[in-house]
Image 1 (cartoon, each protein chain N blue to C red):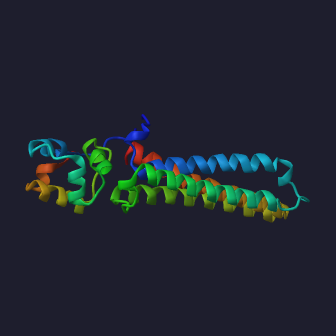
Image 2: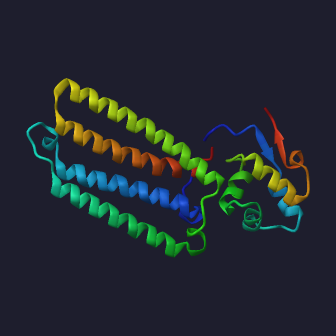
Image 3: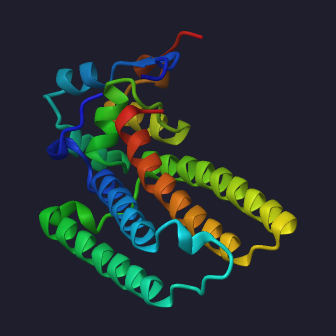
Length: 71
Length: 145
């Protein structure tokens, strides 16, 4: 396994807090596949800056409310 | 790392399947060719080459059609940023493999003037680089990056 990226996120937590939105629905909303949302939630993939902003906007929070840097 | 077919995206399934097809066809082709065909003095195995190309193209079409039927909703969608990034990284790895094989084959050719070895080495390098593209993409999508 590769070392975990120095970025953690609260995507799953926010998704569940806002009516348990499905991974597929979130993926459709920001323009990625359900599998990419799963990879982001599992910390296997750090999204592009554009997708990070789209995710934050979807949840109506700031980017730093979704993603944290631990570098 | 667990590999669960049902949890894979259609692109990951395609990458695993195409890489496996490439390896299977390479084993078949080079198994038919035998070791002696690499030596100077042998003619190009045109029949085996044509059969290889026909079987590989046909196999690829069958694999893609089956995947499209099994994943109707997903199969027509464009790759997203993660899939594109995985593919780009695997293509870069394949470029290194192909470059190394070409350099080695050309050095061998300059030293021995052995065109048959040059041809088979370059063909093997192409197959190896294609396998790296497919399996590399699949591995990155599974493991994360």
